[in-house]
Length: 169
Image 1 (tube, helix red, strand yellow):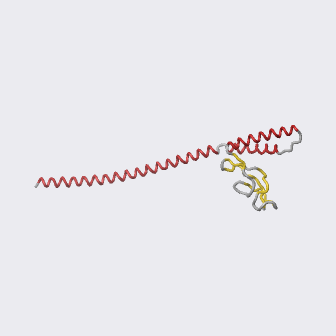
Image 2 (cartoon, rainbow, N blue to C red):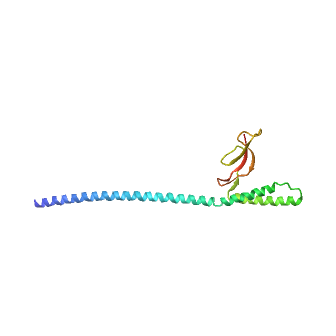
Image 3 (cartoon, helix red, strand yellow):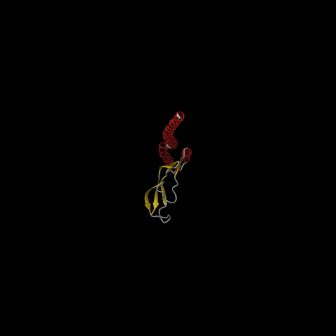
């Protein structure tokens, strides 16, 4: 019987060890799950930061020349004014032709860098146009552009200078 008693004690000891092992396993599994969750969250946050940085880098690259393009718009205005002057003699016509060629080249270069003029016809759009004043007009519907006072320009989808217009009442 003592052998049976020893076997019972061994069995109880083995069961107790198994229970300890199970509780230790559950404890380790909980720690593992917590660490795995923290890792997945940190990895997701890192990926989001990486995507945001790429987007900001792309935006900075696209709009890096915006200030320079704004400065060139004054040059475009001056060249357009020179082209619109009436030329009467042959020398004036040649100068006007040279100014027109220079203006065309500048506008092509600006367009190459995604700078384009804003359409100033049709209905007034406060996102693209700046109303300088309202006028009575029998030829235009209310809220439509009557006259362009200064050209507006966009770079990609961003307005860098609103078109200054007069609007029909």
